[in-house]
Amino acid sequence: MPGTTLSSAVAEAVADLRPQRIPAERAPKRPHPSGRHREGGESLRVAMLAPPWISVPPPGYGGVESVVSVLTEALVRRGNEVTLFCAPGSTSSARVVTLLDESHPDEIERSLYEVDHVAQAFTAIDRARGASHFDVVHDHCGFTALGMADRLATPLVHTLHGQFTSATSAFYARHEAKATLVAISRAQRATAPEGLGGVTVIPNPIDVHGWPMQERKQDYVLWIGRMTAEKGPHRAIAAARAAAVPLVLAGVIQPGQQAFFDREVAPHIDGDRVRFLGEIGGSVKRSVFAGARALLVPITWEEPFGMVMVEALACGTPVIAFPAGAASELVIDGRTGFLVEDEAAMAAAVGRLGSIAARDCRAWVAAHCDVNVVAGAYESIYLAAARPREGAVALV
View 1 (cartoon, helix red, strand yellow):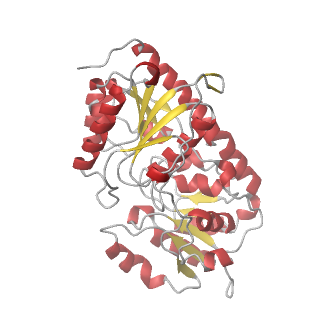
View 2 (tube, one colour):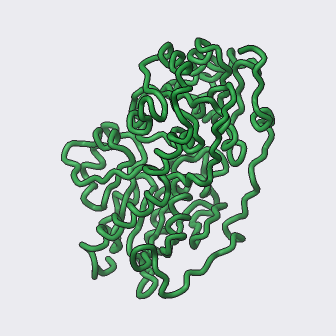
View 3 (cartoon, one colour):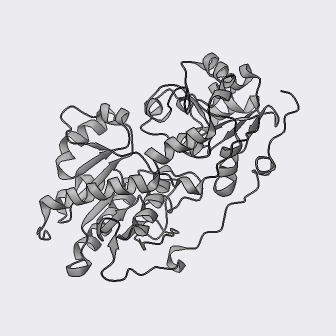
């Protein structure tokens, strides 16, 4: 539809409109009164172990950090005592403990910083005795904490955030007995190494009330993510062009992705039919999601979850996705969007969006992925993990 205009929020999204962050050392701390009780039982003392790379919540890109932030805030609201071990610059209503001198967003998975971060956290956790002891450690760090979990007296719950590969499968096969493992989708669990037993599936959380519900959509469709072939921005361009609708692209270009962007994406950006916003966050990101006619997810890899899908659905925005990874769990075909096989089918599905109700999209996410649902599931996991090791003594 030539001449279609985007919302003012989208038009101004290139400007930096993200809210200012308070450094962790200056962030207000909320004390936990003694005798506090969580919903449904006694208060749990949780050591939340975030990665050392990016602050919590993240200023822009940072899927794990967003999950940690949302879950931590919900656990605190529910009456638990949470200590968040995280990167510098983080803010939370939990007790914030930063262990390294600076964050390392450009050195993700550099073992030096992960090991340093985890080792210092383990020391602090082991030193917390008596009334200050932790009931459980919830690890989101990667591999170090799980590999060394048997060196820690406190039971550890490890969320599987990544894709299983031959190397990671071998790692988990060797170390899974040291902790309680949680998968973020059935698709992810299905790819786990043989013999990995007792893995519970708990989806990544979203605070549904923090995302604006919008029933009257604009004409553009949206793609958001990392600029990689497996995420499919070039396929989204092809689908939007075939459907004759404007496309808004948003996301981060990480090291090593510039060549792909320059070759497959940049030649199509014209500021009208295809517009690129770069990395967006905060109110701008929410507005862009809420205004979109649909989110296009033409992924070609076994993505373990896909936060952009639940963020779109929370705004009442349907998702049109290839049925790879967790997409077939998060998109209910014909109800919250469409599962399609290729770009041509994706373009055809744009013409059927009128059959999808925005309220059905939001209701499904609220029932399955809202943070209170997820926090309650994790509280049950924490209690189950703590029981076998009650009375354990610190290792020396």
